[in-house]
Image (tube, rainbow, N blue to C red; front, top):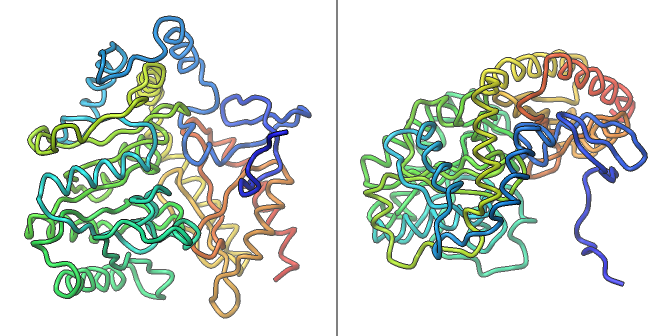
Length: 419
């Protein structure tokens, strides 16, 4: 009898039967408040009626139209619609299935377009598990251990993790930019560097927002040296941070943007966007794939955009995200094991540390388990597993945020004896 790989460990014991909005229902009929959103994927909630209807209609017309063989309307319509939300001058799109694929496609484009081989990523970043994406990933050794040698040509520079360093945001930013300049002087010469790749908020690395000054510094150095700036918006895009794109908080312009996760409310779809002039510099035959731009996924993505815009979900993410952050800080004030609360919009996290300031993964795991037992589904992240993150769908209401905060407060209080 076949069974799933024993390495596929679930973060919760829930056997999901169906989902509705912000809730998941298990096979015993118990309702769970889902603040994981499938790791930030179900942006419009579980089974939003508009998304379901769009997918159902498309399934009855065309499921798969391989887009280097034939063209189909959902792909053309989605491309046009994304043009309304993409930053200028990113007007050319290539569609794929997963975030990792899009990351690797962006590297391929950057190397071919510049004729340079190196890519600089930043410590704590997560860009995927495939061989090229794993080489760029330093959110934890589990993503890259035991599979080397990885893709060459990757250099890793510090990310301004102020809490980890015990510095102010300004000090951490200054340090990270100085070290990037040093890396360009000692490891990867600007003339050899094709791109910088950065997340506007570290995802698996611990939900650490990039200070605007850091992203501005990357943009300035990219312009100065002719380096492309790739912004990985796989988790931060489509309203998650309270702006449509995570980099909007810094007001910078990416050369290549990567999007996935919340793009299609749960259907597999990813994309890279770049100016046409840049995309044209990719080599013939370098872009393709059997399932990229799937018709059903594209139909779901169009419906997702409709819902986000018509229901004002970006504004809702900003407002309910601020409410969530404020509530988390109030809870943390009574629990010294929560050393830091941080995030942007509906991308919030609590980092657990011990009296000595060291990561306390055990406390995080206890609080996480207690929350799940109480009916609040959460995830952990961070290199040490000591960060508990909250990623509700963008449709979450103020009342549901308050319910989650009540459950989280009870979970933290119930496990405080372990302090």
